[in-house]
Image 1 (cartoon, rainbow, N blue to C red):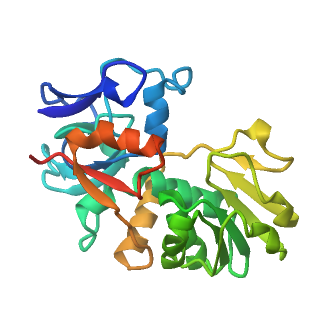
Image 2: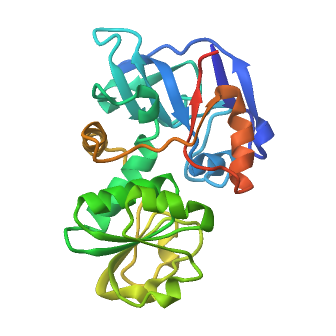
Length: 291
């Protein structure tokens, strides 16, 4: 089968399209025929070696953390599922722990569902588990990438008033996601009404903390805990199938929309890594393993 493998740490050129044997499931695993995988910024960190002390890799390493596909063996052959893997999804076939698979409801496009595991889980846990957003809250969401768009929709679903801080090219996306107010970093200082929660989703240090009301909560998936102000919460997304199933239910009900910016062949993975580092990636990108 074809697979995109990382042969070393460094620039996007370390990722190669290889022909390798189809993986064989072990105990408790199933074989998936991959419908789609995605690019996540954390995978650029893996490639650059920034996470080597936390997530050591056996090289060559088959890339791809999000997977959507159909079960290709066993009693559940043909089931449409998604999962968050530790790698291996950027290929025509992947193995996955059977107990970490979430069935994709009818009516939800299987390819699109690949965008949910990491971005969707991060948004869900930021909004509900850490910021504990409830009806009537004022929530400031800083960053309108894939995670931010899900977070805006989830906070609105919870009944909150959402203020989004976006780049000029993301203003329309923030409005489309349902933000009640959309600001740029240059205009945020003019917005003086306090907020109950600040969800910080950009790589820079914590910003706009002066807008938090006394007792408000700052939640960040990007800023280390030692760079947050007292009381700030840094979290690492947890692979939680109950949260993922709840996200899928909201997608199936039409409450949450999955925005896909591009669908590209597997071989474009190094190009997308380079585009992301140059700030030219327009939104969530899917990779399709079909010829």
